[in-house]
Amino acid sequence: MIALALAITALAAVLAWRWWPRARPPVPAPAEPAGAALAAERQRIYQDLHDDLGAKLLSLIHRAPDAATADLARSALQDLRDVVSRTRGEPGSLLDSLGEIEGEARQRLEASGGLLLWEQEDGIADPRLDHAQALQLYRIVREAISNALRHAQARHVRIRVRQRGATLYLDVTDDGPGLAVEGGRGQGLAGMRQRAGELGGAIDWTAGSVGGTKVVLQFPLPR
Image 1: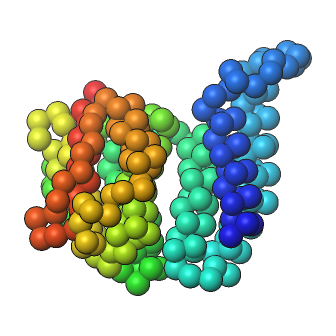
Image 2: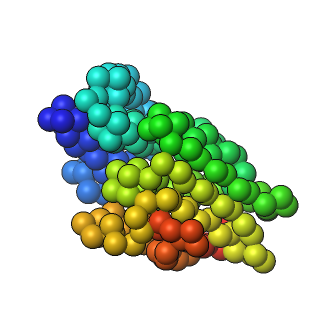
């Protein structure tokens, strides 16, 4: 667990470098254009950390003493890969992101001995997402699944995606004991609210129709 904590601390430093560049002390301007030099340096750092930290997290996944620890390491590894891959490539579309979210969610549930039920309506619009929008969407769903697996001890999770007008609705429902397990997750829930707000949307928690907890995210589709 100490090794995992150190790895996650290092990952947090990477995210701080990515999203709060002004927090770093100023550096002398390079000979080449500043934007190109900064991008090249970031890519080098990302790749080095991916190769080193990523290998350590992968080792922790395989050596974890229990499923919860393995899932925590797996989630941290995916966060690291998100930063590297989404900074290097072009932004994708909404349907591309939903497909990747489904694949990751299914893998996490199966690795934990659970089952994912994915319900996505036909005809959902497919606008382009920028890097920030894609990351916020990924991390909201990832946190919802983490809560279901680690806190609610869920075995089955349903993710449903619908569109009503220009608004996308995505809900995550588990088969855990219900809203009573929310205690102790305040910081994680606050982070999810913040991410939903950055998407221009909102998030809420209700009781599932057949038990468990339902996380409901809604946000306007990009134009």
